[in-house]
Length: 525
Image 1 (cartoon, helix red, strand yellow):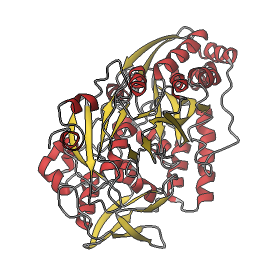
Image 2: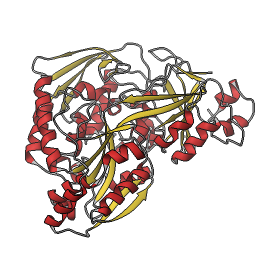
Image 3: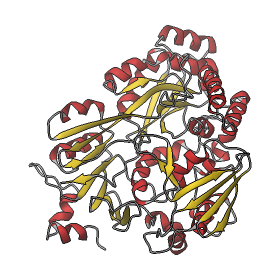
Image 4: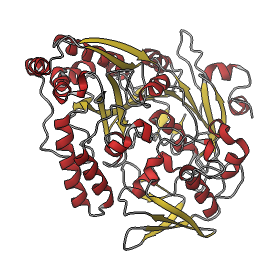
């Protein structure tokens, strides 16, 4: 099927549909086709294989093409049934047995069953699996507790864990747990990420690099056919261009609106959506080499940066100052006794002098834009000025999002002293376990790109994920936050309130605390 055959077939009878949907917007306001939602994304997706990507930008597409065994209940981070209708957990917390939904097929026509579930997790976790080479699988950490996946019968599958693992169900609802078609993986191999097949509300139609990813309504979706005919995800990396496209009518839904642009969407023809979520924006500091190997210098960076000014002046009040590594959206696990590092440039200068690194040269990696990164260049420039004001010599290197990730995720050693980063997580375990443990250094497959290491933090994180009592888990996470804040492996900057803009032709849209876009109930007039 050609990219916009559906628009030509049902809406416009000429090639003008393609130009319109891809945003060839002239001086006058455009009129996008009814029933076809045009979404302005922040970047080109890296892949459409849920096991192979890490960015919310990609997840926003994937959540509409695939389903998991479970999903987050609308408006919450609570787990509810999806491809599994029910499950039972053994008393020792080591066995999870899922009853699967009957009569579900993948978009390619192959059957969803217990064998398909086993294929998905074995592909990620078993290096000897014949299709393990379709990876890499950067978030396989989410399921590292899985010892075996067993097909009990066609509609029953059992997971055996090597230890009790409290976040297991929540991680199954995360995009890494989305179920792909084994037949499609077998057909396309390493190219599956550009030829996706799931069971979701929308089926993949086409991906034109740097132009659009198009998905069409799945009329046989087990949870009811979507109201939309199709969705076009357009990568518009420049925030000003994305804003101009929204104002001109070339897109119907815009995510991650620059705070300075929000005032342009106050008329009746637009709706501004906001939703707090588990987000933290931070600067990774290279704790392995260079000035930030000294905890005093890491603390100095936290004192040097005027986070209140960034939140109020750069982010226009669309975030709160962060106090540590755990977002306050996880109310049960958040440590309310922690206070953010105050803005104290004199204290920063004293610590820098004590460490003997006055005038130190710092290389600072900044992205042009990416998942949850808000206004990264403006924020990076503001932080550069604050750090230079206390005596550092800071050089910013700016990269496109996927290039930025390619530079940062393998680790900062030998490359940079600091880098921006933002995470949206589903459980208080996720971010610290993947980015603060010693065993999560990049060469071990984790995202601890600054090489922070504290054995006490390691012990607390390992213990917290094995405890099923939420109060006990909370106490462990709160202790971890206190230690990490003191060690300052990051500059803790902000917790963001996500936003989006829809035109007055879009109905029944809402943002989710998960930061994903769920479009199966959206209407476009």
